[in-house]
Image (cartoon, rainbow, N blue to C red):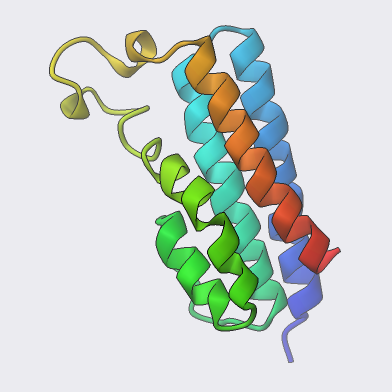
Amino acid sequence: MPDFAAEGARWFRQAERDLEDAAFNRQGERYNVACFLCHQAAEKAVKAYLYRRGAEDVWGSSLIDLCEDAKIFEMFFDTIKAEARQLDKYYDITRYPTYLPSGIPAEAFDDVDAERAIELAGIVVRFVGERIT
């Protein structure tokens, strides 16, 4: 039988590290990377919850979808969907010039964007942490 607690803890540790790395990148003025890492932190946190609860088919990167999956186990995941939805915006646009009419992601984000993304990701990570640790 798989060790669901260990797998959830492993994913959650990486979520916490991604959030720390987002702050590090913000300090280094790598705002697009900070925003992307915030999405990653929140995604990994919700996946950690799902693994902890015994879900086997955990896939995708959409936080809205992952929160819907988590609602199967706990309806309160509906309360963080607004924050999660905002973080979903950072999945592609922070990395690929294709999604910008001109310029590159490294030029399109600023400190305000990174600060807000860190705040949103922190809400999601703390929310999950309260439920799995």
